[in-house]
Image (cartoon, rainbow, N blue to C red):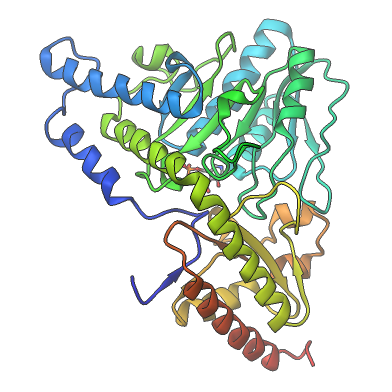
Length: 392
Ligand code: PLP
């Protein structure tokens, strides 16, 4: 793929070859069933549990607070259904507060819970893509779910303030941290740790971290009541049945440690490239609207831009033909012509939402990639606008 510029890391990241190497023994040597009592099972169990300890240590939580899942979607579903139903049973709670810009892996379970009788309240965001840090009137709330960072526009949410309000009210806060992990630094310049946030549950996904697809984790802090979503064996503390994906767990541990180890260097490097892209777009292409906030807490690797008088899909295909891979919004909605719910929640009119592109950078992105993207973008936007009866 050397002739390609890949700027869609928020959709997925390439597998790190060192992660594949780390997974090999789990696939070829310790292939036993981690729940079996014989030696083969024990070898697999050791790998599973050491991976759990590694992931937990990298996140700053305890190993018994970590469930392995099949990815971000499952973690989000387990958090929402598991906590909402447990809170309804334990204390009759019936309200769900969910931000309007959540990934569909949170929004759709929340809508399903509303069909089960919960009252779903969407927390609005400002034009900067952030929810207000204040949360009041938390009576009868079963769960609050606000993503740590948004996958379409990159806004980072005030999780510390939201978590403090939830803790004071005794309401669990879930955060989808799929895009946030390893991409936000604390005030000392080190990668921010999930364990330092006042959250009850958090979701993560391996393939956003240069790890394998099909593995993720849900952090469930001690004392949080969670009903299982699946029923079967007694794996993962009876909260997530199914023969454990040991190689996936090893891959997640290796990938996460590597991302955390490079974050102090990679986060500012990618942020500088994102800024270069933003400046280049602003200087070279007229009539654009940036959907990613220019300042304040935001991810280093995401830039979302609307180009007036052109369709995002047409731009994506034209850029692809010139060797540049980008997205129009979240990958999961790329086949739908519905304008992004995130951009609409930010107050963008439909035509601007439909003319948007999301560029997302990664560890292999170079300055040359950014320059090539700007050249291609200038050409394709100019070309498409020249054909548009709405422009000129
Ligand atoms: N949450 C966010 C914020 C995401 O960006 C994604 C993937 O795009 C998911 C959840 C779903 O994760 P997975 O692909 O591991 O199911």
